[in-house]
Length: 299
Image (cartoon, rainbow, N blue to C red; front, top):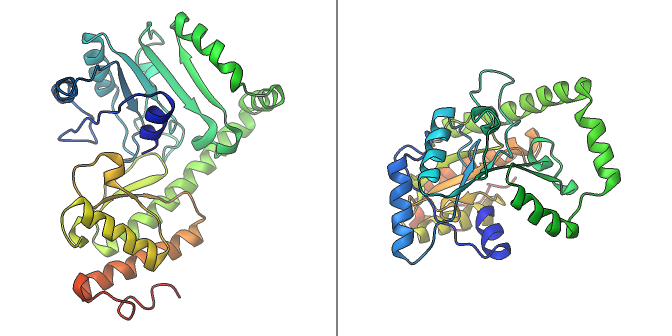
């Protein structure tokens, strides 16, 4: 959802989703080519492949082999590849998660066509700092960004503070361990309640969200049915979940739950409200949902 606004409003680009048979594994070269040909049939010129790893909204992690395959496809078409690793340090465990930065995968040989971006907003919970990084070996791109960046420079005091933090191993490693522990605890709290509700979801290894399938609860299997369910959840439970339609999902009823946005106590309350909503839909069905049947969700 965020990419659409960032790329359309700011850069004037058109985003083209790539649908794959196994989203957790990542799109194959054939699926990427299918999406590219469909875009070109609409008169669009494909210029960039954007990869988010760990994945948003799935919270899954692409293997190095999958990353290489996607990059090889982009290079076969002379495209540039942007790899967004904004959740790189937000894995559920310190080790054994399977994430490998594209910088390591490519042995830091990015050429002129691979560009790596990261920011403090997710891994360090510092959205308000407005600090992001671009790592590229394309000198012409660096020169262009250097000219544009004069309007959004990171202040020198902020740079000094961040340098102190990043060089302080005695802070960084305990902090990341604690952050991952809290992410995992909130994830387990969320998924346990989804299991209790018998709501399928994509098992995640990283990120701050879980992608759940509420399609069985929709009044109809359409985008309109998804919107009605989202409105019911908001109006009756005061809960916000990102609908799949905002993320180009073709299946109505998929929703992203951001479980790290609130404290575990608040998350527990939210999941209990969601549980009540799910129970009332299954009991009363949509035709009988009203203010009386929906009473008691917020206590």
